[in-house]
Amino acid sequence: MPRRWGGSWHWRAAHYCHRPFWHLPEVSDGQSGPDIIFGRWFEHVKGWLTIKDNPNFLILSYEDMLKDLRSNVIKIIKFLGKELDDAAIDSVVEHSSFQAMKNNPMSNYSAVPNAIFSKEHGSFHRKGIAGDHKNHFTPAQEEEFEKIYKDCMKDINFSFA
Picture 1 (cartoon, helix red, strand yellow):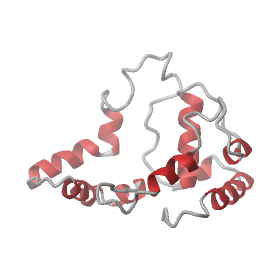
Picture 2: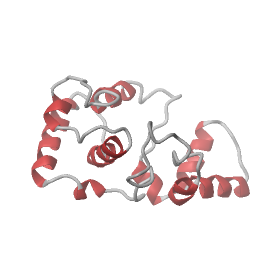
Picture 3: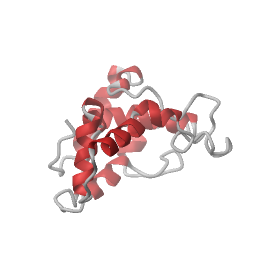
């Protein structure tokens, strides 16, 4: 998951928010400068993971949703204490699919002004796959990211498998 985040974050920041590709030393040095939009991923995730055992907190992974969207939708429904019939669940699954969200102006940022989110490089939604970081990280970058990740997340007992 963290490497997937890196590729995904880079793509959105560079293409939509008019920010350059992040440099790994900037990610690891504890700073949140102008090129680190929205702050450090590590601090953001660590903050949420401190409450991972709270019964009002649900963690889902993109990879799990890709494997079985329906069972993750059911997990969300149960988490919210709701009941839906099969037709309603089917509708949620249909409208939550990658392709449906990519085509929906309410979720694909096509209605956002170009000055805020430029569409000249393509749509907000990319490929809808896991593991695309391999197409964006060199082996050296991946090795450096792994080192930074292990250092920054060493005190967190959670697996992003």
